[in-house]
Length: 371
Ligand SMILES: [Zn+2]
Image: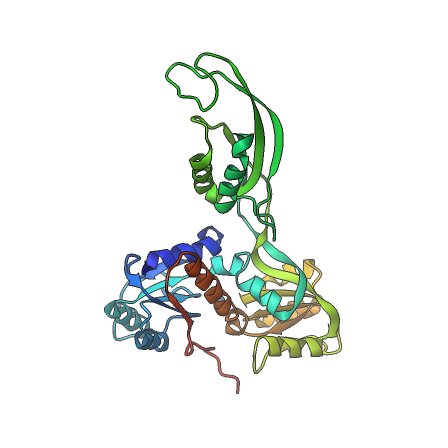
């Protein structure tokens, strides 16, 4: 089955919800048409002339980048200058560009999660939890239909707590109702009070999927009028957000740990602050530009922060506070997500019976050369 670009956007947003994007960001479609058919998708950190040529050569009608192609307000598209020239070429080539930026950073299986796992951390926690809102969905179901309703809710994304899916609670009780004139009740007779054994089924849902979850529930619930409640919760999204902190299985010296970072992220060079003989057990990571998050890393008990784009003053402040750092580069700490993203999209397409090639750019590299 052939797909349109919009279907790939939906798949991305299912794994990496747009609600997780920072307010200042510009995630989603950048250029093109979601209705265009697509049979090959190219994934890259950034869109540039080299990636555009690669997309043309490889026949990829959709390019998904991490960094947004359009970030600040565009006031002119001048073709005698780099950014305008690139934009015009993309439009003329009929290529669609979509970006998943801070939503990809913050998601449960996004940049920071992949980075933490790649470096070998355990007991991984979020450094700055996202502001996702949660609801408690409670529905009253006749016992013979409870499994169908529970499955429909789980299938719509309800009941995820950390690494556990299908979380729900069921309690048996008695429901009462009196069908009035003009109704066609599933159980009971018009005008007579009915007492029915029902199950109170409750589960947690992110507020953003409330509409989808309620629709899925109503589709399989046998009652004409379904009794359900949605309660706002104070729960924080402990599974998504910026940065991660975790522990090494065995303590390493900062010297040894630096070697591990270089090896696991396949880097030629990193910048480091702190004594090479220092014992490292707790590690904070933040893909991209995470230097400003160092106080959160310190509060989380990190011995070292691994991130990119660390500025001079942040470096000084970290050392003065007793925390070491490794600047593994903006590109170096983020590119690890591309293979993971490719994997999610390949699985998602396979599950839907869609035949789309997902490929990772072979030309998009670090803008910095290490001499
Ligand atoms: Zn970035």
